Length: 432
Image (cartoon, rainbow, N blue to C red; front, side, top):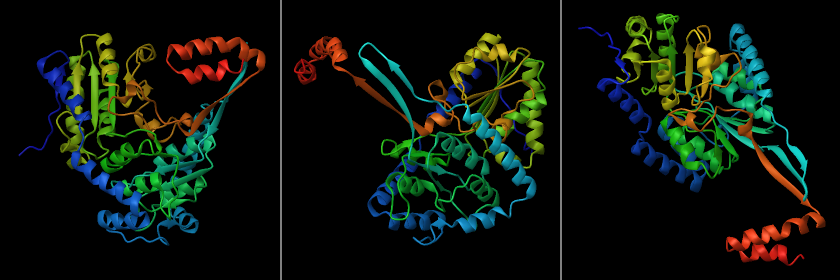
């Protein structure tokens, strides 16, 4: 019996192509009501019973016993575990952190002051006081998540950063080294919806934060969605996505590898799409995908992906290819065409864009400095990747003197009375 996987290749406007596009859209909007029910119960429990519920749910879901004494990872343990990381990996994490910090430092914004006919207006940019970072566990360890979430917060000026991460046994050395390198000492060995609840509502052992960032599984995503409003969040991270626009100048084998790089995240709902105007290239990409899956060390997981997870669309023109990308609004977009810079100027909806044959998404995932926390599920239509702006708030300040007040009062009164707000109007009218 053959275990090879057939990769769908369809013209965009064919019945099969339209049906495949519909399946991709449908998969993005799905919600698991069972997950929502469990998360709702966990959040309510932690909000009401604090540590007792936090430790109870950790025992129930992760089969780990925690207490007020053990929930926090000591700085000494972080340093000791960090020493276990290999010298080569330590060097890699250091170099990546330097690049991520340099890129995000350019994002920092100052306020401003302006004089108007009425007085002085200004804007203060103030960092959040306290942020919580979720570092996922489970499938593997993610030291890159530590860097991508913590560094922008530090650049923004956040003074207190609390990290939560599910720990099986002992803290992963690479995660420990990244934490130690960045000077993060407030680390809790908790995960799942209960960790999000602790950060949002606070318990005796875990103080509440102002914002929660970082990716996680379906339970973490549902919990973040539910606590938004009590705290701020970065986004609802969904399965990883990549779209690749390619022409015949691109190597089909490279395209296939870049698609599999996103498909291997392991949630089972990833989407990797190649878009081209060449049926010949499309078939070559599909053939390479099938070959590489057969030879892959994680072929079992790749073969279990749903039918729409890996697909190739053939469009009639570059304009149509670009329109498809703007409709999909993918988390990652690679443009592997002869005129990739010109094509990129026409893209309005994408979390991040990677140009040319030598800029695979993996560079941005780990090393070059751009952030890998990006909008998924089509939210790139209105959302941006994680950055320094996510860890600051803006405060308007106005100072108007007597002369300026008199010049503007009649207009304020007119506006207020037109909207039916009598006391707004009187508050300026009575001042003369």
